[in-house]
Amino acid sequence: MARLTAAELAAAREKTVDDVLPGPGGPPLRVLFCGINPGLVSAATGHHFARPGNRFWPVLFGAGFTPRLLRPDEQGELAALGLGITNLAARATARADELTAEELVAGGRRLRALVERLRPRWLAVVGVTAYRTAFDAPKAAVGPQDAGPGETGVWVLPNPSGLNAHWSREAMVAEFGRLRAAADA
Image 1 (cartoon, helix red, strand yellow):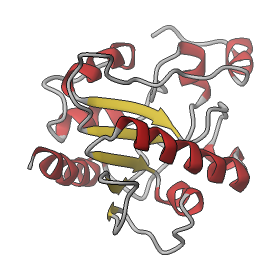
Image 2 (spheres, rainbow, N blue to C red; image 1 turned 180 degrees about the horizontal axis):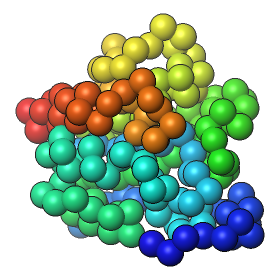
Image 3 (cartoon, helix red, strand yellow; image 1 turned 60 degrees about the vertical axis):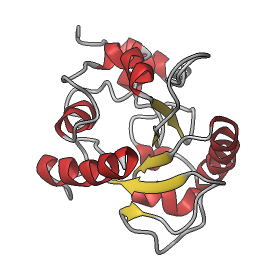
């Protein structure tokens, strides 16, 4: 990926990134991954988890969700695997902490409606702090949650951003792998 200019990154604050979802006739949605919001690189490129250093794609592969390491510009291949991607908030920011609590709560409402419509087997929210705010679950921890919308299970995953130093790549692979095992059961 070519290095983006400061002007391209600044212009990305006005952009959104389309959801990645299976189309009509596609396989059932096993897991809908939900990021917090697009970063500036993602918004500039139109690809989820596109910032160099984001560990989403390597962790997804390491956990066995994909048969090979995908690049962000290959995100469309997820639909054939029964996987999708959305975000809590559409607004692109340099850092997730630039979002307001109100934006996250509104995103939680939108996400519940999307899950009710699509009925994935699992909703996987990457980022426990954002999940706590969006779903009014102040004591939530990484892992499966007690209740989800309808029949959909909810699993909170660690945020794969390179800014999240609390989780090693290996620990993330293990947690994503626990979800994959549940999704395949």
